[in-house]
Length: 295
Image 1 (cartoon, helix red, strand yellow):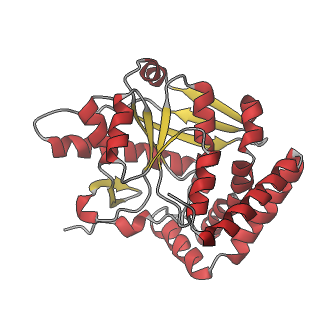
Image 2: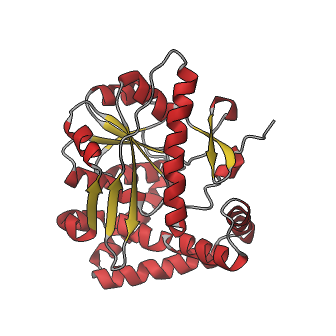
Image 3: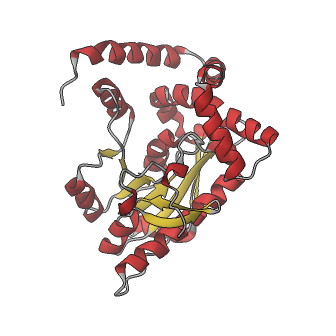
């Protein structure tokens, strides 16, 4: 898809800023990230912060003080995350100093099987570093399902930065072909559902919310595992990718029940991670719009 003329200024301005970020020493880049993160907190519209505060209160059970601390940390991390993403070519030269990795033994066996699989994660930590880290530590091919950016220019820049196969939601054939070819395809599962009627219900932080059926459907169809994975930044600036134990989708005569069981197992792992690292998750990504009323 060709760039729209109006997108060129955005594209070149972003490239110029990326070049500036790559010229900085690591300490300077970290300081710039913190400054940008502070700006995110101060300039984000108050009504959006209030929605997130309500989510932290009503769904996470945080006190006002704790909720404010979590929300501020969650928003301010976008500054360092953005700078790190633009500096990926530098990080790629010294991956192990920036990104660590650990995986459940059964997950390692799944990667070595050559059969492909489904990876699932959240908008938590610096998820943009997954591709770089997984390509370095895992021999199996890796792809990621992403939504198209608002501007063509941003799409082009994202494709330049990402080191893995990119699949868009409307590329169903490419998605299935990738798994058939042995790829592990990553889904960011906490994005909103366009049609709640198509969602799979799962209990999440005390409420029944709707989740995409795609990961469980693909895993069941190809008889491959679902591997939850997360990335968390440790003290000292190093990120750690962790791949959890595989989740298998049952294959009985009741397909709907099979998909619900697997999706609930995935969402339960998500909830455990959010409770452990609430500052890592994007509380503005409101899964609460997908709450399914009881009764």
